[in-house]
Image 1: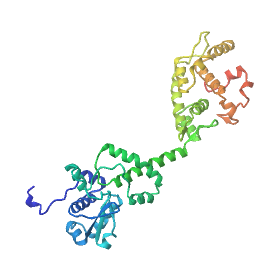
Image 2: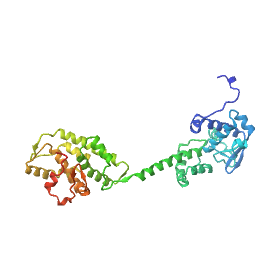
Image 3: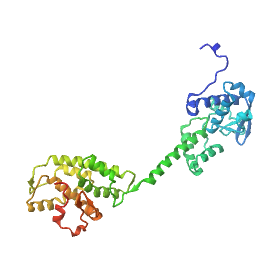
Length: 373
């Protein structure tokens, strides 16, 4: 573009800075930086303060109305980019400000090279090891109800991170404010999660909604679902974890087992006596794995199971299913988690036997529960 089309010196605005603090804010900061290069300012409280009267502001920011100047300068202050020592512009008609970076008493360092000089001149520098947020940043954090000690705890990590990156910035106060807000949101989220999560209780049962999902909508046998409760409780009690989603976990747990179980039934449907050398199929072990039941425990029950049913001379359409039922029952009983010990209500039209397991005979144990017939 021909220079004759630009009647005056253009403003230089950093795209990355505009993306960080806003286009208007980056534009005003560019103007303030240019003005600061040609004014000594007053060193006070560790900051270099500059005073711009209405005439000067109007000359260099004539593209804004006084209301815009007040709005954008306030935004820069609220973001922690600058400090203000004057009343709002519409009232005071002046801007008394300092960049939110402490200045050396002797002025800018000399002989530090063009890159360092340019960064300082434009209001951007690297974070010093002893950097501290301004009082305005602390006030903004307090206004958001963030405990001061929490914010101070974030400071060492913040300084270390940015010193390792070795990047200059215009507004360390604004960066720190954003970092603390992000950390506080994560802290509150974790706190709420801990507050609502609960440990698995010995008498836990799925909610009516979870039972409806499994029995009514997924078409899973109610007694199959009941038999899955003790093993589920045992597994999560031993893990000692807390959760807010026990019902969802249980639904997934039962569905995985049911899918494998139905595949087993489909492959084993002809009624027949149990063979002398009978062994459960691999599908049975797959279901037991999904139920988190120890396979060695299951294998220890095979001999007793075969002897009983050979003596009874009964036939079954699925010895795999019968054995699965048998193992689940004894696994729950061995860990004092049998529903027969912990419930005295009716399920699926059957009265639950509340006698202690040691009072029950082997025949009762093996012939009890009809869901798998």
